[in-house]
Amino acid sequence: MDDGTIVIARIPNPNAGPPFKTTASEVATMDFARTVLEIPVPKVLSWSGEAENPVESEYILMEEATGNQLGEVWDELELHDKLNIVDDIVAIERKFLSLSFTRYGNLYFANDAFPGCEKAEIIGEVPQSLKNLVENRFVIGPVVDRGFWHRERASMGIDRGPWKSPQDYLRAIGQREIAWIGSHAAQKPSGGLFATSEAQRTPDAHIVLYKKFLDVAEYLLPKGDQIRPTLWHWDIHAPNIFVYENHVTGLIDWQDTWVGPLFLQARHPRLVDYNGELMMRLPESYDALEDEDEKLRVRTQVEKSIVLWTYENETKNTNPILHDILHIVQGRTRRDTVDFSANTWDGDIIPFRQCLIRIARHWNEINTEIPCPIEFTDEEIKAHLLDGEGWNENADFWDSLQGFVHRDGWTSNENYEQALEMFAQLREQGLQSLSGEERSAFEESTRWAVRKHE
Image 1 (cartoon, rainbow, N blue to C red):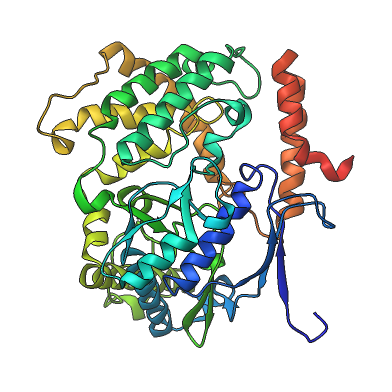
Image 2 (tube, rainbow, N blue to C red; image 1 turned 120 degrees about the vertical axis):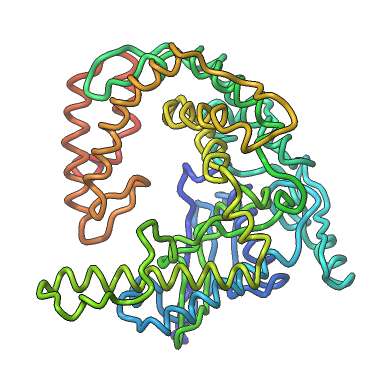
């Protein structure tokens, strides 16, 4: 700006979600988080959910987040400074937990309400004046989750919420995929560079699994407050956090934030996540180590252990319901079952089936009131294990790229050109091995990999 003020302009990716609704919900959610929950969120200065404007696109103009992006400074911070930031994250999560809603769905401004929206009602130990403000200013409506709008789903009469119960939400996922696969998925050819399992190529195999998913949907989640409708920023990691003087001053990237079942929303922030063995202090043999790389590895292990332990301890004391959710029996399997149910046809059937097999195997730990409503035969388990061998090879491919290209497609600016070139070469190999409609679809969906060459 002329006065030196920096304004951030955001234009949505065409694949982000439904037009208007995606932008409108993101703006309303940011406003709710900033004004109602009092979380440090950049203020939106102007926005448009329509493309009929001088920009010829939907857009959001917002203030620049205060401070430095945590990803740029985290590795340089002293441990006690990192722990200050962990404390701030726990405090922010407490604000998310301070209230809940009566419906599951996406937030919108009341002025932008459309058919399917309902008044947003909040529950919690909050003043009546705040409840009135929320009810007058916001509504809760259908979700913008891409899974409910991808491809032909956008024009299908499927249930997109808002929902009264989390079980209704799970049923909507299963029914959506059964309807789409039954109408639009065609048997895929075998062979080629990107060969998949027979089950992956067969529509009926997917439908069978979704029917099993619907059979357990009623019992998959815990009960009570652990599934209350809660707004939650599920992607709290270094690139989305801004800090100043070792305290959180901004939280960005609210596009996929919605009011969902707390159990499905809550997870360890990636910033503190650590899966290795906990080591809370340097071993006595540390000073005798001569390999500097080994010393660094040990120091890193100790630091990550302390950061995770601090988060766990602070969460247990400050947000006990969150602590309980993060340690619920078979919690990972139950959450993963829902996560992998999103779109097995364009995604992958094997992790989804693995989750359902684990659900059946550990049913007595999940629900002791009724017998498990699903089962897998020995033949089905054997076929699954054979399919899994090929899936593991694919997983090994992505594991080999960690630090270069992540599974979600993220790569650093420094590695971008090299990553694009690698995928351009893979694209050419794929085009040579495919034919017919599958080749046409693959060619269209991978054009991004060669865009700079055309």
